[in-house]
Image 1 (cartoon, helix red, strand yellow):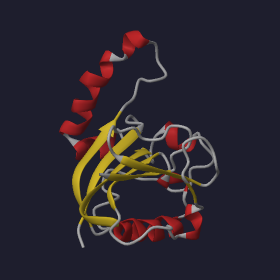
Image 2 (tube, rainbow, N blue to C red):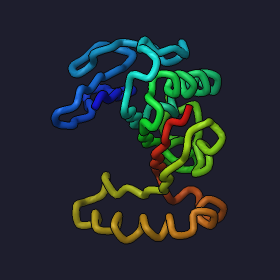
Image 3 (tube, one colour):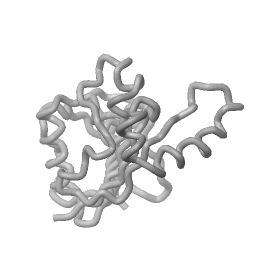
Image 4 (spheres, one colour):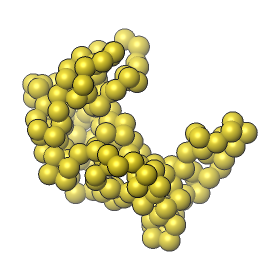
Length: 170
């Protein structure tokens, strides 16, 4: 399987036996391709990737660059390929406390972009808390996702991360 890690940084995706291409705007360890996503194009052939992962990169794009990159991702992904996205919840402190974040997202943000939304989840991450609080992820996150409409309307600031799996259809 051929995998593109969009915005890989120093934590390139790991998957044994797969070909993984790390893409970022600056050269570094694990970066195979240097590319500025703000330019709106990706230097790959059509239908090249089986999986694309984008962890905390899309929120840094300008509004127009975001839409260009989503079109480019459709172009370079094979039909049926999966796009996994982790982004800060646009209503949370994780989004507002980082000045590089320019594009906010909600739980319904990807429903009209020409991908099939297979999974969408709110996540509250206790990663910055002591280990003794980590069990709360297993308890709290299913509750946030049980009534996603309620969570988004009445307590949108609680989940700090959103996770999506989008299937490419052409």
